[in-house]
Length: 364
Image (cartoon, rainbow, N blue to C red; front, side, top):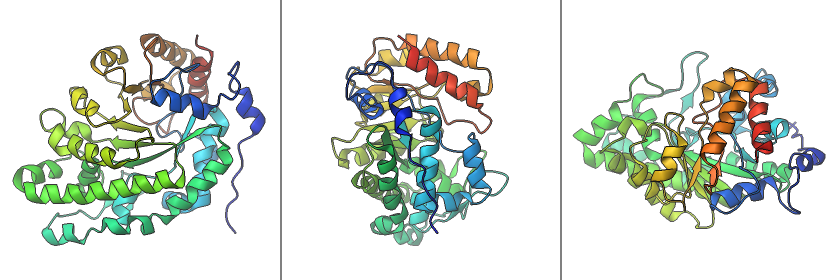
């Protein structure tokens, strides 16, 4: 029997938008901000908002493995909806993982009980690179295609749905290292020592990421985010060649009407490169003031962020104060989407997450 999906309560949806204009929805607010157009208040969602911090997620995790959750459309839909039900975020983000793209290419991954991601290291020989088949992505990610309509039906047009994928650079780092690593060096080594193989690998990964994002858009997501979570590994003069140029190639091929967000962690010296990718919104990590970045990024590009995720482990009073500080810092700047500077930590407190959302909803 397939797991059931609990629909979002309609009464709560309307109650969570006080004094909204007729017809104004969370979805509308988020999409307007992506276009740097006026909104009634700053929209909010969190990276990694669906998952370990929620007791309802932990209850599911007692019955199902992480891979079962992402591979089963009904379960993935249920986990996607959980934080929106509880906190009334303006957007949901598809519950999945950036490593489903390498997995669809034949590079399996797992999450042991302790210690990050584990994969079989990819050696990037000519034969291995040639064996990667981006043309099979749609078939291999069929479960993603099935989960999106389930989520959209439950969201009922009230909340936006964000799809996502990892950047080619970030995926290459995980593949070459064989999962999580204390230091990511093998992708850089390949770049310097065998540029031809590096470019061939990145071409294959770019095709796979593009096809994954197109699949999600065709299935109904409202926006997509590219996670360049390891962008900082090559930040500086290498960043354009190792990462940005490949993200730009992907974004150039996406439908122009679909907002694209790029989150490149640790790349605060590369805002010009990031702005030139064609992204509609740039997501900022917590290590730099948003007030500084708003001076460096054109006002036609939205900015997302950037509360320090650590603060979700403190108190509602402190996190509300920091939320107001960021909102004041961005006052009058079109296209601000409130988010964290990285993902929700597993030890985040429910009351601090609620305090952020409530502070944003009441801020004037």
